[in-house]
Image 1: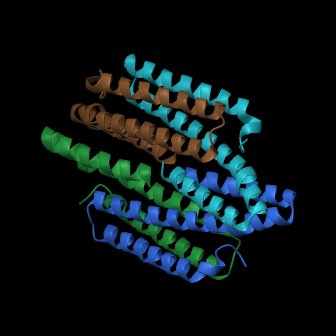
Image 2: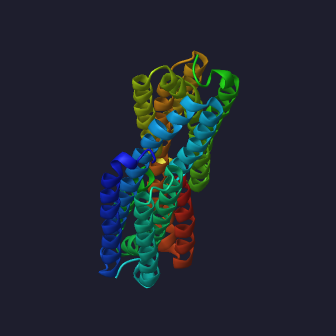
Length: 93
Length: 93
Length: 93
Length: 93
């Protein structure tokens, strides 16, 4: 059980759609679609992936991190540290 | 013929790999993998997509934009404008 | 008292340095330094600002959010929601 | 003479404003303003810096890169390479 478990089906549906969008970008490249249009589509997929990340992070903070902090302050601090590192990777990607 | 045409096969291979990575993320969610590990993998895919964008943009600048500018300054200026808007979308995504 | 209060002096020192870096960028523009060198310096300042944001967010999660969640689940959930919105702004900026 | 020279005064004014915004963030930290409000303000400054970068890049492409490509294809290719590296730094910051 993780933060995202309750929304699992919605996440799977979004990831399925993103997978289809990536396949669509490959098709655009294969059919020699204009560069800028390919780039616009990649930006859309990147945004969709980031939205999934932000949702997962919210679920993670609201469940895993908060639950750990309620059980034990040291465990909570470790979870906060770990979440911050993941936020840093998100911001830099 | 576009900027990326010469490297088309390499781009298709990279996009195929990214598609597989997105499918792998869906599998992680389906198998209840720990949130932070899912997030790390999404960051990796986002970085891979951005690397494709940066490559496409370099090809586009080096061919479409430069060729337009050599043919006609006004056409070159329009292409630069269009490329800048795409760079702005890249930076914000 | 906020999450960052214990590190206030360190944050003020970092922001002072960033302020000086922005002033340095204006000086570069004023002295007609080569565009790419100005851009490199702006990227460095953006990274420094993001590092401050990530530090502040870690302090915020570890104190304000965790404390609220320990006091009252509903208050904790509201803080998580608010933090997620701030993370979304960070990722998109 | 660089791509941005014609707009130099406008860039200096924008950078001056950004410098003031960074000073304002330090003041917020000094006065113990709520973490999320400090973060919102840092996101605004980061966006303003990125907008300056995108403007400088557009000027650079429209002048330095296009002029080099008109003078000499090899010089143009080197400028495109250099600009792409700067775009990659922008996207990752």
